[in-house]
Image (cartoon, rainbow, N blue to C red; front, side, top):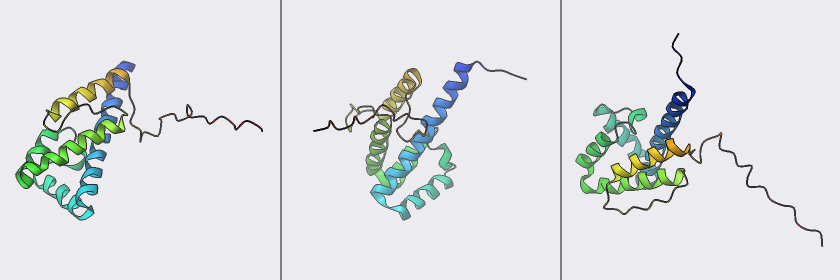
Length: 139
C-alpha cells in the first residue's frame, strides 16, 4: 500500500476543488450570458471536440480555442467573465483588465489558492461562523 504525505493529499484536494469551481464558474457564465439552451449547445460542441464538462478547467486553453473558432473574438468576453467569476468565488480582487493574459491570471490564482489554502465561497466546509451578529442593546 502506498501512503502519500498529508500535504500532498491536501494539495490534491485543493487543486480538485479549484478545477471543480472553475468548471462551475464557466457553466454559470455561459448560462447567464447566453442562456440555458446555448449553454447545452456549447457543452455539446466541447464534447464533439473531445472536451468533457469535467475537463474544462484542466483543458481551458483547448476550451478557449474551440470557443474562439465558434464565436470569434466574442469568445474572449466569455473567458474574461469566467476568470473574473472565479476570482470572485475565492474572494480575490480581479486586478486585471480585459486585454491581459487570462491564462496567467488563472495560474496566479491557482497558486495563491494552493499556497494560502483558500476556499471558494460555494464550498460547504467554508466556515461562516465569523459573521456573528451581536444582540441589540436594550433600551
